[in-house]
Length: 245
Length: 282
Ligand SMILES: Nc1ncnc2c1ncn2[C@@H]1O[C@H](COP(=O)(O)OP(=O)(O)OP(=O)(O)O)[C@@H](O)[C@H]1O
Ligand SMILES: Nc1ncnc2c1ncn2[C@@H]1O[C@H](COP(=O)(O)OP(=O)(O)OP(=O)(O)O)[C@@H](O)[C@H]1O
Ligand SMILES: [Mg+2]
Ligand SMILES: [Mg+2]
Image (tube, rainbow over all chains, first blue to last red; front, side, top):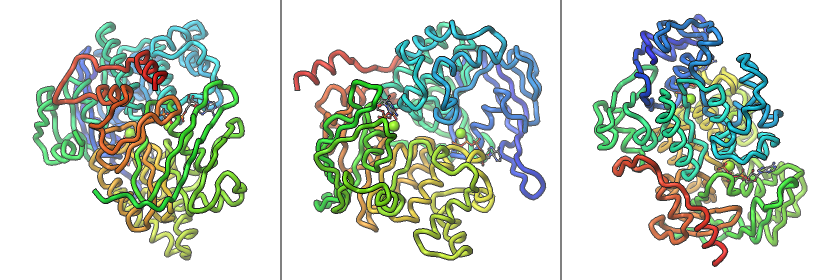
């Protein structure tokens, strides 16, 4: 479903040039859930943004659904992959009511007015219909993150790029959101790339995980590795040690 | 584990917060005292943790009605303090690390200037020295590539970098009371360990009190000496060890955490009717 070859991302120019992602390659099968863990600032969100078509600093090859995609995407290509952002504050327009937050992407992608999809979208993530009329600052952090997931789902993408989707959530809502994500994947055959610093979340959700440090992948762990805490690189061993698991 | 200092830094008695548009109290009759210790507050999303933290700092919007029998910080009654007095206390004597760091940083000032400003203000340093102190502190919170990062603006740094920038600014101020609202939620676990160690050093060195708000129960249990559990605006349990949890809500939270050693297909979710029933009985 996703194939990435020699993806490189650099920001800045000349002496200020910073190579953030360094020639990484990976692929994700249809219906698979791939986890990415790694040091803060190592480039995880940048990888996801490149996949989602939100960042144009990349070079290399990305193909989604067997189609090679460019930095400038067609609407159909943009519809393939939706991203749930790391911070539920910055990613939702502070002065728009929730109904508008949910309808906006539908209109932006020229798929209709979007308003008719709002009740279903809220219901899907377990929020009461009345929230449609609220403003983001009237919701708690966790409620906002459910809105963010609802917004990504409203376009019915085949790929969900999840950037720390539950790091702002308490464990009880996290359990609900993770179960929701598992169900959606099962029912609709969605493909996930999930970034999290929480190894227990990765172990629960993913078939496979890549460990990233300083712009490259230093380790790859399968389901059994994740469950047993078995690692093949020094850095991933440190991650397991500091996880209080 | 050392016995918490009994002289209190913060006293909260019967604190209530009501938002205009809501019939339910966001904070409902909360009482606790804080000494020179690490106190954790856990509870689900919307249970009122951030509202409690902001009420103590008097940073709630006008639509919020705050009432308390007592709200005292180091001998000062915060209830009676003017906005001018509060501004002086905030960032000096009491600090709040907000849940979303990039939101609370000034978007039009470079990171270097913001942190240096904190050093100027709190250490009374000149421009060059403040810049150097800022760089040193950013290094201590494990920002890699400090020089470059200082030239960036808030929207150009990662979520975890933003949290550490906020923490660095607070470490320069050395406040008596630190309220950290999800201060490490965007940090990878290895950096998180270092940041927690720094927070602990700050608290120990200055005899300060720390309130750590987090949904990460494992981390709070490992780091804090005491844990308050909040549910629907109320403190339902005051624990020293997580294992001692009695309330069905707390037990439900523990059971909802994924555990790699015991993989399950679906995670347990809270049985709200039975929790609410227990609430009514108590
Ligand atoms: N627009 C930009 N301009 C300059 N540098 C940038 C920009 N966006 C990201 N970076 C840099 O790229 C690096 C990686 O950032 P990224 O957000 O991908 O990290 P991350 O792995 O997601 O970290 P975290 O776990 O803290 O969210 C950082 O050093 C950051 O400063
Ligand atoms: N400005 C506001 N106006 C109206 N209601 C609000 C406002 N701020 C918060 N609330 C409501 O008050 C309750 C408590 O919110 P608060 O942000 O304190 O929760 P929290 O425990 O910090 O949650 P989270 O873990 O998701 O951050 C929620 O139901 C929220 O919707
Ligand atoms: Mg990120
Ligand atoms: Mg909060």
